Length: 407
Ligand code: PMP
Ligand code: GLN
Image 1 (tube, protein in one colour):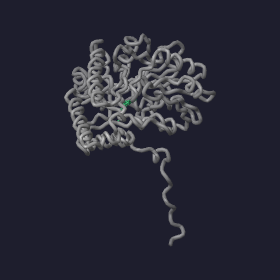
Image 2 (cartoon, protein in one colour; image 1 turned 180 degrees about the vertical axis):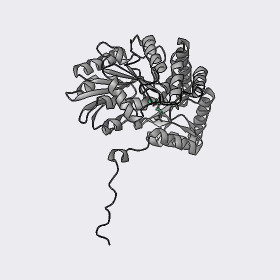
Image 3 (cartoon, rainbow, N blue to C red; image 1 turned 90 degrees about the horizontal axis):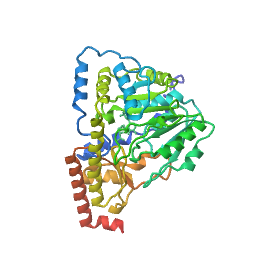
Image 4 (tube, rainbow, N blue to C red; image 1 turned 180 degrees about the horizontal axis):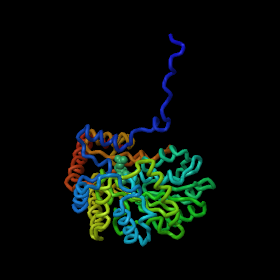
């Protein structure tokens, strides 16, 4: 053998190598494989508003398809600033305080990059969206996890306070919250704001479901609380606000002291975001209040439709104040396995797909008896999914499986 042969290849990035494919992709693939109705990954099966689609089509044809400005086209930055004023009373400078990104996913990473140094601590709240933890780790920062637990999803104030310390650089807060459907209250936000200020820290605010709140719950951006304007990076998503999840247009509102670093992170990640889609999103953000009210009214009716149907089947459905999702306890149906097994089972046997809620927890001891169902679907699709679950349950009950497992 040649003694001078090249050594074997060195291992690739350890963190990425140990990160699995996202649960949304896994469950969507399983849904396709089994011909299941996909109530897993959160995307609408209906189109976004016509004026927004039309604006995108027109913007493609008017010869403005080259690199737009780094922080976003002026039309969209202006529309984001104006939406901040209209909905939350925030006065924002469109030139120095808005950064447009390729989706909220990029925005989350860019905001974390803007403030975290290796060794800094970042407070994260479980259940958490799947990009938060790996990105914090990739930046060499140290995640400090605080856990919300169903069915109440209450903020454990003492534990949150204990998670903050001298090395805390930031908290990442998602409200309305995926998958819990929780909208943080003014009192909870005040508690968070106080901790953030007492530690000289920042807040990355994932507010992609800002316009999807129900039953009179309204979303309060942490950024609107006293003393929080210069510490918060507030993230919105056209995907959620205009039911166009494939577009991947996100927008960050941040004080002019913070926005430049966020912009530099965006410069390294993607540099710019398609200008035609940006201009269409600007049209969307300029739509009248009736559009935004109609969006939540329509989704609330879908939530009620799905929640009522699941309850009638015996699921323990938790309240949802906002987002695309209901969470349901499947133990009353007598299923013996955990949530991963349940979601796989109903995909194969009932031909309906959901997401196991334990996928949103990183640590040991996550709840394993809840499934997350998306209700951002046509009514007929929701009805068909409920019909399939009813048929599956009927067959199980008739064969005695469900009853035996429950007993
Ligand atoms: N944050 C949360 C809580 C989400 O549920 C999602 C998924 N849509 C995102 C961020 C990502 O949004 P986008 O598609 O705009 O990247
Ligand atoms: N936000 C969506 C969800 O929670 C999924 C987005 C994705 O697939 N990355 O279902």
